[in-house]
Length: 370
Image (cartoon, rainbow, N blue to C red; front, side):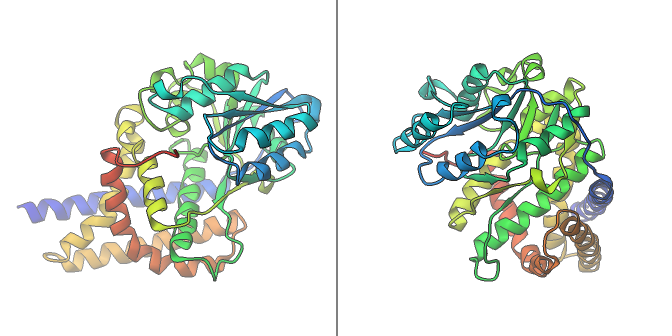
């Protein structure tokens, strides 16, 4: 009876997963940017802690934006850094009048230090639109303009992000896996948003209207959650009926530094996965999709001991549909098709990775930057 129930569950999970893959694939094919000539005042916000190795790169990119300097400001919230982060930012601020540094207060009392830092930076922001990225990211010269174009019909805009691998062939396995997995996640996120299911996003490349942020209560309703300054906030916007768009222009893309080890990757993804359990209440549809994906990856392995034919069929069909979806994503986001060759190794590693990340995330077994 148990085996039969698991077999039925595996079939149902695959059907749900297949349905969403089709939706995501259709979404990334149909997604497009808008044209918007309105130039509002903008505040670019970065929460930084011990980022002396990275902060120069993102600040250099931001002070050289094509957007009129008098219409945007850069706010770096120094979250108790114990290195030279604040000194570097201050040196930039002395040369660029639209850049300012604020010192974050109350880190030791905050359940979520990053939400605390972002809240204080947003309080200090004068912009109508808040743009967010991370200190270890790099954006292009037209980043602000490319994201703003989508606000013609949006209250929140999600941008594409990927890890920066200069030499794919020589990159370590952990970095290749992270890069490929990150691409697959963003392809799904983009397709979901276009299809009307705003499932996920990343604070690496993110923007929203400040007045709407205030309207939904800022981070107040999710301040008790240790993570989720991006995806959980997105769900507050969705619940309030606000419009959410994905930016497809290559000028809106961001790059982030790759992990240096499997340990770092597992810790990062466990932190992200910790948000998933909250989706049961925030957005059950997202939770339902995640559960189907989890079961599609793991149940065929278990059913090999009883219904191996069913397992083989599910895995083969999964491979066919995933390859098609990822290939379309690579084309849509101008990524080399050669990266699809990594799919077999990604497929083999994924069940073990999935299980570990899901378990660690469920019990909040991860660490933040110290």
